[in-house]
Length: 258
Image (cartoon, rainbow, N blue to C red; front, side):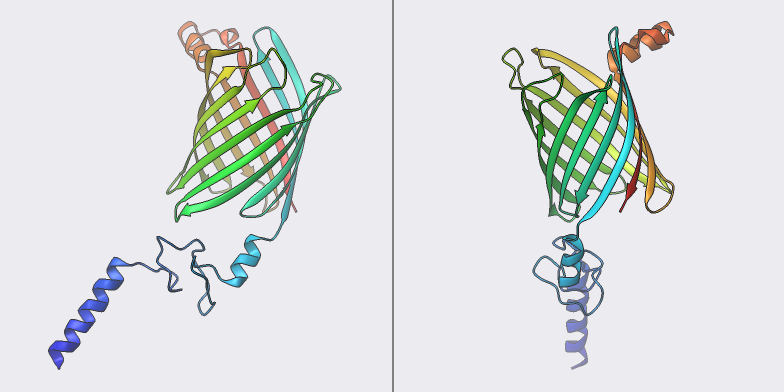
């Protein structure tokens, strides 16, 4: 009898060692889409309780004001930005408007849907509509997909395919690699991306960037986004002349969560 009890205990221990269920909701961590479920809450096959699903589907809002300075060769532009976002943990709808030289420059409506395909991996799919403005009389579109793996850092890869309706413009692709991490009240995210010209699909340029966001409190934040052409940075490093940077962007935002 004692031997049988020992065998049963060892079997249970081995099973628990092989299948880890941190929140004890009956769904293994590798399949649990809602970790840290409170004890005694009934969950579905994905490990999500009714209370957690209600939180996931609850809409929240974010609004921000920003300033952007761009330089492309000899041309420099100053833009003023306004962005408002309605979002849940799974979906978001945003509207971005920018003003260039006191005239409308961009007016963009974006819709995204995010799904966890594994415990630490999510896929985000989005669609953008670029509305007609003072500088563009036609509607443009973009499709975007982004995959993110969460560990100590969040590692992401994304592809954006922009479709221009202008007759003399080809489709434009932007491929981005990034990593991000929250350190105290700062979120930092270095990134690199490559994209082709809208007027020459074979002309690709590479950019290096750094994004940081500082949370003033639980509701308000400021952010800074810097990016520059890698070839320009290499030239500047070799000549020690800051005027060699001909393609760069600086974006500053202040935002608030509602």
